Amino acid sequence: MSRKKYHVTKTPEGWQGKLENGGRASVTGSTKEEVMKQTIDLAKNNNNSQVIIHKANGRFQEERTYPRSIDPKETKG
Image (cartoon, rainbow, N blue to C red; front, side, top):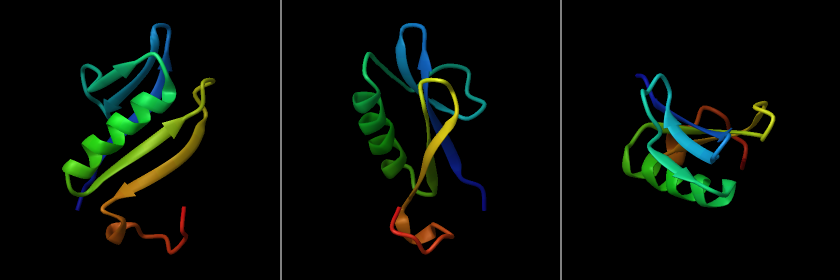
């Protein structure tokens, strides 16, 4: 079963939440916090989704899976 993967990344204009291999951003904004919240809401509304959050330098920071019950890890993260 494949998951929809959304990436929250820094852009020259601010931040974006974009579906992996998507043509354009699903969410854009000036702050990481607002883009994260909107992207997480989008993922929660699309069952079987992940949000992969990147730091401003592009490196991996964190990954969240929705719904939580399909997360393969047993950690609270």
